Image (cartoon, rainbow, N blue to C red; front, side, top):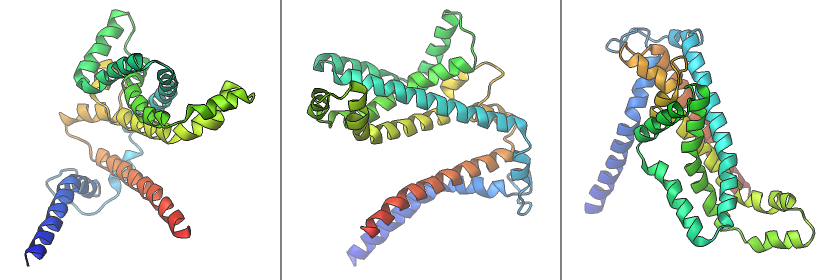
Length: 262
């Protein structure tokens, strides 16, 4: 009897956690189909906000800027982070530990400190705030996440195989592509996805380093909060959530199918 009660409480606790996590998202999805503009009244099922979303140039421009910024910053940060990891791998232990400690500082700093620091730096060197300054800031704060994703994979590599390839006449670039790159590729991909997510989600650093004419989704929503968030934003958030959910299901179902075939 006691085991049944404990089992019930465990299941109830898990259901409660998931309810608290996903209730706001479910509410947002329901509101995206609400015909009424107000959140307090249900006006019937409608797709008008989804149609209106694709007619709103301001929101579409913010979405375009957000995606381009996230893709560019993640890609550049991944390339630079991979090169940094290779350099760190060749350093002595003391030097490597020192650099890794410095690398961790941006992750421990609050976003507002990083954002204000970048703003003051750009103003101090006479650089006008623009898309370029936002991109530089995003690349910089994405780098530590990429490095920390790749370094564990790089430590697992047996460098004797790489050196043997060089002794047999392979060029350094060829040996890197054929021996090291395949082994660290999972770390590179996870670092890229992490950097993309961090850039996509960032508000504070973007807010302090952008010019008035540039808006990402986070800054767009922030400016609308005072006036009232448009229902079109609910529709856009729903599309983004469903897209991420479908991608996660596809990624997780593929390995399951391979295991069944094996």
